[in-house]
Amino acid sequence: MSDWNPELYNRFRSYRAEPFRAILARLDLDPAEQIADFGCGSGENTVELARRAPGSRALGIDSSPAMIERANAAKAELAEELAARLEFRLGDLAAARVCGHFSLIFSNAALHWVADHRRILAAWRDLLCRGGKLVVQMPANHEETAQVALTALAAEPRWRDALRGVAVPSANVGTPAQYSRMLAEIGFDNIDCYYQVFAHLMNGPDDVVQWSRSTVLRPFLDALAKDQREEFVAQWQRRLEQAYGTAGPLTLHFRRIFLWARRGRN
Ligand SMILES: C[S@@+](CC[C@H](N)C(=O)[O-])C[C@H]1O[C@@H](n2cnc3c(N)ncnc32)[C@H](O)[C@@H]1O
Image (cartoon, rainbow, N blue to C red):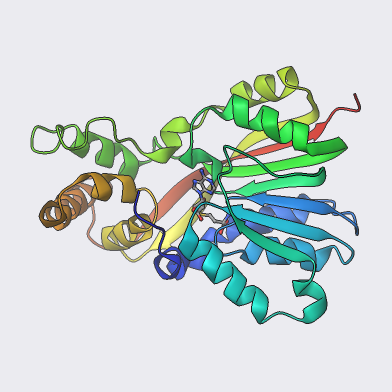
């Protein structure tokens, strides 16, 4: 897949930060936390976690060179004491080839980009020290109007050959009940999995398209020839105007799933 675009992704930063703020409001951080942030992106959340736990160390891992470059550039601007406790590294969250035991494994808006969550969560469990915390948040909004319209458009005769096998990333995401069972089976306790829906005011369907360009649209655009991409986007935008019933302001109801658990004591 093409690399991420940190500027485009951060255009809706205040909306994208809402689930992290919800996590911070609940998360009990120990001062000496050993933190792994899988799919850390440009590292803002990793830095904030380390800042709030003054004796902590935090490792951010991401598979995007552009994101890791951005995270390291931001780290270079931080106070020396904080920067010394942070490390950003290129890597695959699904391979989890990192040494050491963590007291907090955190992943925000990243795990839905890959499949096989049982295997990954089991590997993350093994990276946690006993009693260590797991906190995961990911979009689970494949049933939202825009994503339903995107999936339907991709299946139409004009596009279906080029887009065969391409799906919205939330298609990888299960339900709270499925994760609750899965996490218990692989050795977590204190499990709490739930949806939360965030309401984002948008100026119109065009904003939904712009919001999606840096995320859900990428695998679709990557699979199309360059000269087909804007036609696909324009068709999707027209479908959004029909589906939302407006070319003007609307509320995007963005459902996310939160997974909280602790590694058991044995
Ligand atoms: C939507 S961004 C979220 C970034 C950050 N966690 C945040 O909340 O701002 C998703 C991130 O997941 C990363 N990602 C996707 N698949 C990955 C993988 N297999 N291994 C590591 N990172 C991955 C992307 O490179 C991207 O930076």
